[in-house]
Image (cartoon, rainbow, N blue to C red; front, top):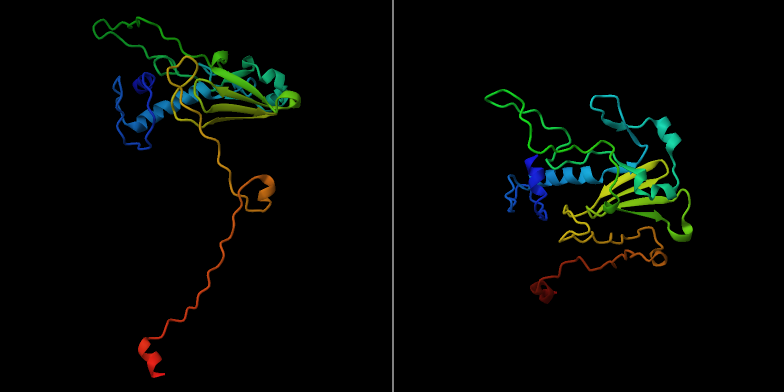
Amino acid sequence: MDQVVKSRQFKRFLTGDLDAPVPSYPPFEGKERNLLRATIARIVGATSISPDGFFTLNEDDPPAVVAAEPEAINEAFPKPSSELKEPDAWRHHEIDLNKLGRVQAMPEQLDETSGEVVVPDEEVELTPSLDSLKPELWSFRVCPGGAGVAAGSVVVARSLQWPGAAAVVAGKRFLNIYSGNGVVGGVGVPYSPPLPAAIQTEYDLTGGAEDSGLLALVEQADTRSDPTPPKPEGDADEE
């Protein structure tokens, strides 16, 4: 919990060494493996979204987020792209961490002297389950766009808070993906990391590379040489 709170107060690129120290201010208690775990928890809670209807709340106390029944999904989906490109049509199916880095309420603390419950000076609210999206943190795009927009077009939601995080919905399926640097960004933030580079073109091993614009593999010509070893000079004179 404390590591999540501290990780929000500085920005640092990961080195790839899980045992590397984390020099920062305020000091971070732990190694890079702990910073990575805290960052993953923040990203998952903030960017795991899906169209409203894929998940629901069960009857437990407190209620938990569970996948909707297949019959309910078949009735609710597919939804038109004109509806899915609005923030109100999406929900967080993972609970975002609150200011204390928690998704559950703090346990009650008793006073050591009187034994009474200690009331905190500031009550920190929990993030509600299946919370709605904040429009200023997301952008939406319909693919294909323009004249190619149809009722069954793919809708892409991109996070402006965590560059590299996106959600895609097509018909009755959705997908969450993150490919970034593990550094928070967004509008009004002093530094926002660049997006990952474009995926490199792969080789076409099936032929037709020139027509598709891809690079083709060219087999290197075989080098032929006589394997017979040369004869010693003395043997050549005797003959």
